[in-house]
Length: 500
Ligand code: FAD
Image (cartoon, rainbow, N blue to C red; front, side, top):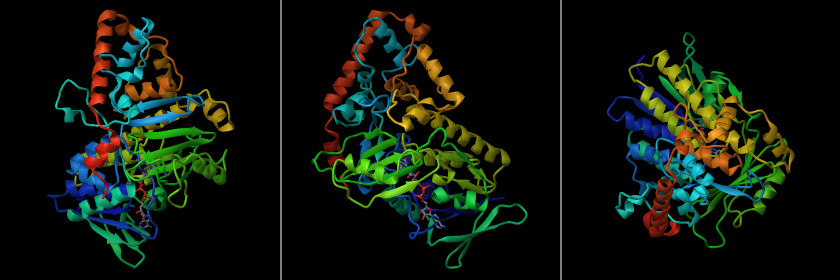
């Protein structure tokens, strides 16, 4: 059946990102896109840290970065600083980009390990541009220097997600997306196919469609409430199920840092996301081990300034919808699952869901194979990210609370155990099935949380030490040179994209 009417239910980040991408795709086609959202219900109101693929998403839409950043109070993000994860008092940085570069076809951390065994004492982190720039609070695009011998800077954004959705709303409406304000109160299924044929709004309006995108958030209005798709509950692996969010002003007058902070507490962790004029903060915790009041008090006790709003308490169940695409409904955003915000993967999953949809969708009709492929790839992506998140909890020496005792000793998926064992043996990390996180990400978290490599593989072992030393010296020099040329992140943002 040809797709002529697409209905998006929900206008949070997921709804408007989807609307923007589809309106771009459909520019030259005759497809009507309607988005329904309810101001009375509102959005989840959190979600500020992103990862690098969002830069490309905006570029694909032809969005002017400066304009978007100014409109969303955005800053640049070079990675995440993790404190108190492996041990209380320790910290490490998970950077975007890579450590060094591939040498002789192997990941740099293996070469570094080889050099350690030859007496090299420089830490791995100094061979990563983003880590060093973040450490000194600097930022610039390496292309600003107009030199091609410098490493490329990888970055994402910290954004006010509510403003980002509003920005994309403007973009989408200009391209013909029709927004309808009001609550969806009923869903009608076709009696023969079981497909959703229309939704009914609280003013009685019936909105018919050929394809429905469920962006209604945790409630999964179409995918779950209407189609009863089912949900895989992953709380046994990722037990945090609550969060309290609270923005604050930076009272010390400091500028925004170019990285997110994730500080572990006794039954969860706290985020700090620096926007241009404030920090977004929140405490993610496990209700089995911590009360809401306790979580709130810990958060307030660890803010960089006075709270700038009332606390926003949220509940969630980590996991994913059994099928992201069921009949003629595709769940994108929180309606398709949520794996907690530790590595800022949720907006990314919206982005990759949209990419897959745009690649697979044919407006002349959808085949079962296309739908199955979409579901299979989504499932794999969720599982790979899930394993990476579990690693942060499980690879710890913390034994100072029942929460850490649980996550340290819990059973983890075999796919993760395999990954850890391979790494321990000789630092090998296979990036499987196009998985999101690269060797540097896995190595950063494993080494950062106390998993050690016992060896470094035969290729690294066969490398000539004096030559390697020369290469490491060069790498360190080029990273240091690039960072020295950079202005402070705060100055760069103030000049490039001051908030409107
Ligand atoms: P929502 O924002 O909940 O939007 C749902 C939409 O559906 C709203 O417009 C609502 O009005 C509409 N709606 C619902 N029911 C109806 C109805 N009956 N009729 C009409 N409209 C309806 N992601 C990141 O990438 N980085 C982060 O740092 C991050 N931090 C997070 C922290 C926490 C604690 C949580 C819970 C999430 C975080 N996320 C983060 C996830 C991120 O917030 C979401 O992925 C993102 O905001 C998308 O949400 P959504 O659009 O799917 O849902």
